Length: 267
Ligand SMILES: C[S@@+](CC[C@H](N)C(=O)[O-])C[C@H]1O[C@@H](n2cnc3c(N)ncnc32)[C@H](O)[C@@H]1O
Image 1 (cartoon, protein in one colour):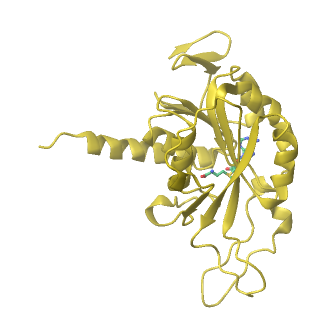
Image 2 (cartoon, rainbow, N blue to C red):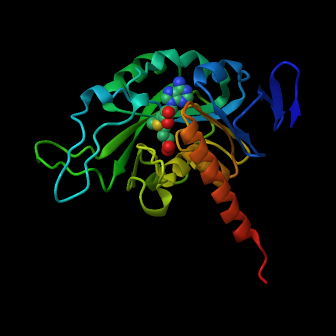
Image 3 (cartoon, rainbow, N blue to C red):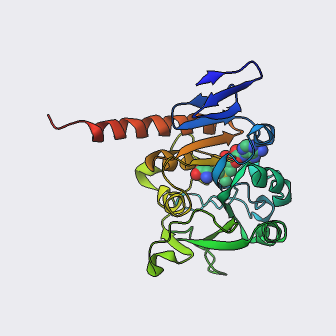
């Protein structure tokens, strides 16, 4: 890693902005608004944008439900979801930093799907979507409607993109996994939308190769960084909230400890 006088540093052969919150040989994390960092990333330097931006769902929330027989049902997302997210504002930076062989995968919600399509479909050769089916969604206590058991992920790329097609059975645009629970779920503080590693690992394996660079400008608790590290990819993550950056770094160091334990030769 070399530092330049121009506020940049060289990390794995890439010129990236200096003063990250954290870095090691595989992962760089900035505690910043991604609007400040994204314009400073080099053109065609990213193999996969894998991200989970705000959903603009807070205005639909009916508030938390206090129930005597079970723990509170949390319907309020978070403060960061009160700021409006417009897919159109991200198109030019995502296109500019992406390599011609690159892919973009972004979690979104039903209310934003049309906006993503309107802007990203004309700009790329292909626009598809995946569905993550949550096998343990929040119950619908009043039984007046569907459970919110599916989350959408938009997928875009140009011809010649990296694509590790396995077999027809494994290439459905559908994946099932419980929401994050047990040891995987970070506590104190909890991140309300921590994604399961299983879902992100599936996407990273399909849409990038070992040694590739993954970008997540809305890193949250660091799931993309942890999954990238586990799969021998590099990751640049940006997260505006310091408390979530702290979680991400803690998760990464726990992961490194686990990897080191695995790599130790038998006594
Ligand atoms: C849906 S969450 C991501 C959750 C993540 N996938 C995980 O597994 O923990 C979106 C995150 O984006 C962050 N965020 C919102 N606006 C941002 C911005 N302008 N720049 C960087 N981060 C931002 C929020 O603080 C929040 O943690």
